[in-house]
Amino acid sequence: MSAPIIDGKQISQDIRASIQQEVIRLKEHRFQPGLAVVLVGEDPASQVYVKNKEKACHDLGYYSEVHRLTADTSQEALLELVDKLNHQSTIHGILVQLPLPKHIHEKAVIDAIAVEKDVDGFHPVNVGNLVIGDDSLLPCTPAGVIELIKRAGVEIAGKHAVVIGRSNIVGKPVSLLLQRENATVTMCHSRTANIADLSRQADILVVAIGKANFIDASFVKPGAVVIDVGMNRLENGKLAGDVDFESVKQVSGPITPVPGGVGPMTITMLMQNTLVAAKRSHGLA
Ligand SMILES: Nc1nc2c(c(=O)[nH]1)N[C@@H](CN(C=O)c1ccc(C(=O)N[C@@H](CCC(=O)O)C(=O)O)cc1)CN2
Image (cartoon, rainbow, N blue to C red; front, side, top):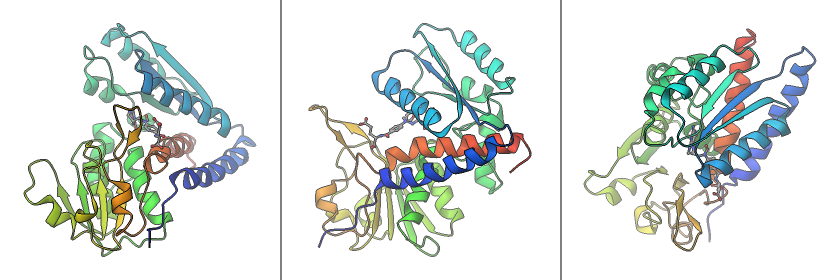
């Protein structure tokens, strides 16, 4: 028997529907969440993601600004724009689309975003708050992973979670969030010996290593929950996850597909963070 599929698109829609209701209520108090998205350069995938963010803002009734800057924009000019947005009262969230062109120092830009408007959750203060368990804006993809697991009806507390990948954007924050939910977490990475042995011990397996179809059924304990954060563009133009979905779903428990799993949650959690940031700025959260 094949595993239940965790439908990230449907879960995303459900979350957006409740955000929309809350925004309608808040608008009666002349309150409108505002998001500024900054895109530097013409990376085709980034252009699509930014358009989708703009559309999500429109659909949910947010105020939005998209700043499309040419690839040769200087770091100084980008920092000036971030500073302007930091001080703009209609904007509660600022997102600088990554990756940035090579001549721009990503960290300098992230560090320049006001902590309370950092709806990506990438600012070191937000990262630090996540580490010590204080309230913070959570990074969108990791927050989406936790939401998918919970909405699939899976209890996290007491489970053994194995996270494969240790990036600052996914692997590390996902591990911290799983720990916060009282899972026992093992982190694996490129230098881990016997990844398959550790992976087979997981009740919850989160994979974010950026290698197409790396995890097959031999890595998975029967019934384990499998969350695939990978998004690898193949030569034939198709998108593949880090998990060999067809093989793994024969043995796993609930599993996310790619596309249609974690990806759609990234923008939904961004919308959620923007709402939280806006409410906090009005003393409502
Ligand atoms: N500042 C940021 N930059 C980037 C982030 C981020 O969270 N903050 N994440 C990614 C890109 N991203 C959002 O920005 C993103 C990636 C994927 C999806 C998504 O819906 N994926 C679909 C498939 C889409 C396709 O066919 O290409 C899916 O998995 O179903 C949404 C947002 C890097 N940059």
